[in-house]
Length: 604
Image (cartoon, rainbow, N blue to C red):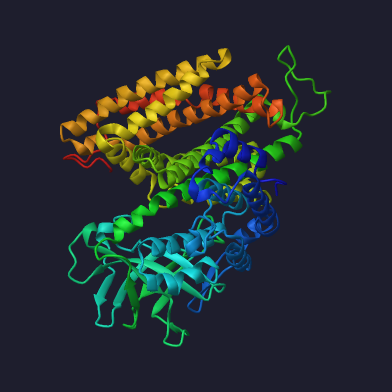
């Protein structure tokens, strides 16, 4: 096991120096918080994660959740996570004081959850899903639903889930068939099945509050006919006692990774006695669920960034300890009498470690930026400013979910390569991180779905206004970097990539303008990779800007070598990652169409 799983100094640098959390704290909502209090909160989360999360990550993989006699049995640390999560505000952190929350900025909450995810990615989901379910009730549920369910969820006594997916529907939510039949008593009779329900059942919660998408009898077809219901595993009786609510745990899926995080198959109403209560208005369920989806997709990007970070630190530790081979002499030969060198001294190993570093730290920066936009759109009074940050957030959300997931998986695979044969062995953690992160490109809308959302909806939103705003943000960073002689060349490169992006977008949008939407979206995933790469280059240039400014002004809160390492990482990204956009642009602007179904079937 690695000795460390994150660089706390880098987390705080990105949080305070680069993304300027203290500016967000100026908003009235966060008046009770300051840097010192948030540092104490983050320090307590790190101490908790060191003690109760990190030591159990391998054990949870080796002793996965399992199904037995209608129940799911999970590792004992789930109980610690639920109870301590409630006590420490890890569930309620961002909620209003009135709801029992701490009114933390999303930025601070994201940083705290990142620490937990990096320590043990099998555990935070139990409280994260409970938070998401409670959030839906708080925002859209009646006063009665809030009073009955939310306090027990925020305390960690009751778990919460989101129940969207069905066996026959998968990601196509318009095909949801779970039924809701109204009764004169005010509740609905629920019947149907849901699959892939994370944290859907275990022995360490007194109850589970399922937020279920279902179709009220007689509702219109498609997504417009879907409603949202609170469906508890046990419903409160007249005397406050809990009564079984005909919610059955059918199975627990056995998975490639995240084996300590249970994923259940639930049945509703098999005996005809499952009661559910409508959340908000009828037929608005999908809208409600997707209003909460920005937070869920930030969480997925955050989790992937965290695993990539933990894998980087495990690889780095190994490279600093493993002697193998000898350095090349100036004549290009090796001296067999010379002692072995540590593998971190080999250029190719350094290249692999730097690739891990730029993906992990860049992904964390992206996730914190999204959290900043989220905080500002929620708290700023000025209407134009609110609209600006709302549009910026909507545009980057597909990339926030996708870049850390896809590139994080590549980075972890690279980390496994650093260890060579040992990376493939269970003695070392890399193979587990490799398995754990693989679900993240699938969670909360697959990469293909995110890519179509980015190109087909977000890019064209309000006649391209969101893209204009993002371009302006990038141009500001380019201007700032151009002030420094040794950053100017990278600012110029990024400017050229912006021009290339305009050319690619213009080419693709031409198909949409002609009504050829299938062609327009057929290469949405390569476009996601293209724009995600450019966005990441922007974030790295911004990180380097802040580092260079600290070195030039002398206003340093970190060591000189710390700042220099950030500038070096930016240079690595621009040399080894950013040029990939050239090949992607060639793919995207190629006239030949090879993936759209034609008259002849070509898969033989």
